[in-house]
Image (cartoon, rainbow, N blue to C red; front, side, top):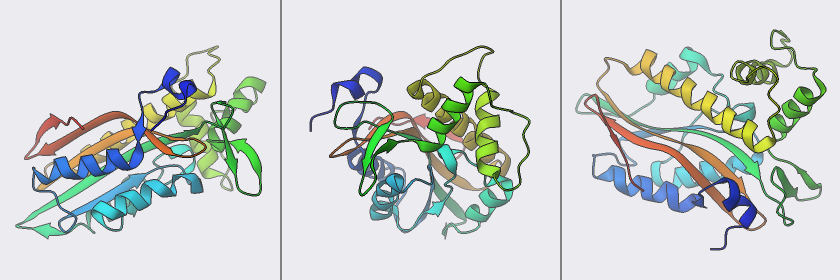
Length: 236
């Protein structure tokens, strides 16, 4: 597998399918299987992220969908609790695999943040983050905006701006990394306020999906398992 040098400049990435399957094989040692575990996938709504869902389904079965613009986790405690009520119960315990991901493209010319789409030519990926970046560059972002007809975009802008230093001028790669920090932090908070004290084991995977002209890559950020309340980092 050949990884474009422009991707290597920013990410340590490998085949997405390899990451998902290795994660599954490692978790089998901890008692996780496709029959006793519910997978929950956080990703951007972009159709480019569907290969991740399909890869997860191959291992874990149908996943609970956490998707939102830019990979934000907008489902809140109620949506998260709904997922916890869908998990199989085995000997009084539930098991989960949680993914928090963002995504970015790399086109045939090696331009980060661009991707070829059938019938559309080259477009932005992630489009939601590219739109936010343009608004930041124009100085037109209002972090206090309230638009009931555009809830996910408003939430994306607010959550990102909370972490941006005043006067910061990120590029799309940097903004994508910031979005992952937000999504990862939100996932951990939702886990804490929903599963704490419950008889549950779970694993967390965070990272960036990278779409190139001929492959789907994954830059792993975090990967760990929590069993009986004890956290252990996983090597994939």
